[in-house]
Image (tube, rainbow, N blue to C red):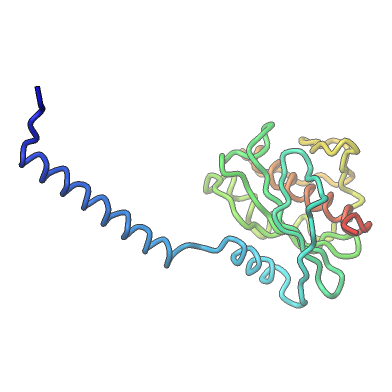
Length: 199
């Protein structure tokens, strides 16, 4: 017995298909004009963090990030400063937000010059306080030799070995650990590149 196709049902199905097609087309057009080029955004943020010099991107293909961290960008300035963007995922009680955190760290002549927040979605009034300029300022002037990087490429958080240990943000231990982990990731990258590890 053949199934009959109701004319009204066919019109409804075709109308819904046309609406879905138009909606998909509109979304594609909006995405085309509003899509953010992540690589360009990163370069812009790096240039803002260290605006005084010409930057050269480093080849990090042979570099292995510290456990729990990912080196997202590595640059060297004409004056010898190294600029790193390190992302820390939520793992091993490091960080609170599932998106993780990312910070830009500038190191020159074995000393951290600056740490700036790049991305985070930590709790406002708690974890987000670890990304304020006055909190991140504690890293400025710290020697990379005062931050312990384990030989096994482990993260070592919480850290009781480093000569420098950051102050904690009240009620935001995980976020504090994530910030320190990102800085440790930058120090590990600095040690690698400054010793010619990419040559």
